[in-house]
Image (cartoon, rainbow over all chains, first blue to last red; front, top):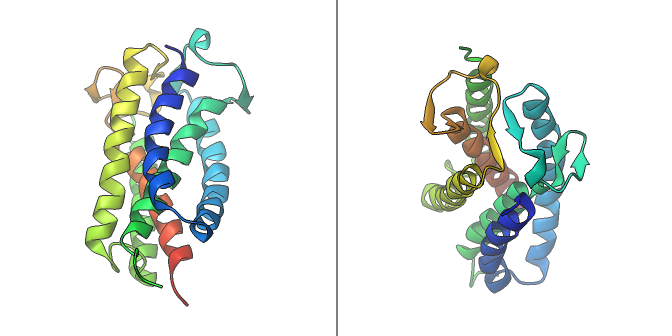
Length: 96
Length: 101
């Protein structure tokens, strides 16, 4: 299994609650949280890769990169945003 | 052996907690909801990481900035703190934007 396939599975899992719970305007919140998280991920990921803290087997990644960060890495940030906004808003359900 | 990475992650976590405390955003607003909002993605990310390691997709790089203690093979202890920073940062931003004026 390569990184793209792995991340599709896990990101898919994270997306299910969001698709079931979130309504209309709440997706605007998702976009607003996602934007800074993608920027922070791009910075952080490049730093931990450039300093050698984490490494990838080139054979298993797509090769598409933002700097030195594989694009697949951003799936973690997207999953975090989807799950956390969903859980947070789920507790507000039923309120105006 | 270095505490550089772990130190930076702890610094980030403390900073996030201070922001949370100052603005009463997450744990200092709705602790149960916050705990669940962190715990579920955190668990998913640990499994995700382990699956990536088991598939040979990624591995711990050189140990220069790491403490050197691995929780599982190729899973440095710092990774738990990084996943905490990822989840807590997302939570803080979500809570801040979700606040009713």
